[in-house]
Image 1 (tube, rainbow, N blue to C red):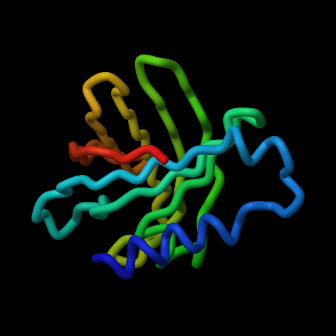
Image 2 (cartoon, rainbow, N blue to C red):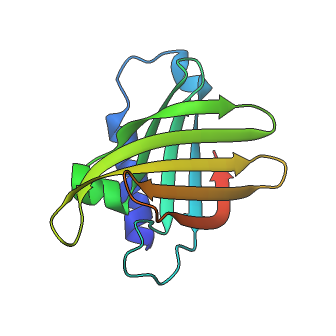
Length: 139
């Protein structure tokens, strides 16, 4: 677990563009741990790392599934970034166990004052969805 966390943070740092100057000061990391449950079909992993660039309004997302599918962080949408909550949404196209291409829709919400994280995932075109809760560390 610790190696995955270090690898995710390293990948996010490596993906940061050089010469960001003052923009770097506005960037923050949100490192979140969740309990995804024991469902074999669950698309959620135990750790999510977000690099939020407040000046640019952009976010990079990384977790074990993204690393497996994409070999590095992907861009997400910074839906909300307030004193109340930080909301990030992202999509990932992957293969299901039966070999079907599946577009997974993810949404992570960090409640700032409660210091709680909620993660939801849904495969596009299917009724099932997945949810996990946890906590985050902001740096």
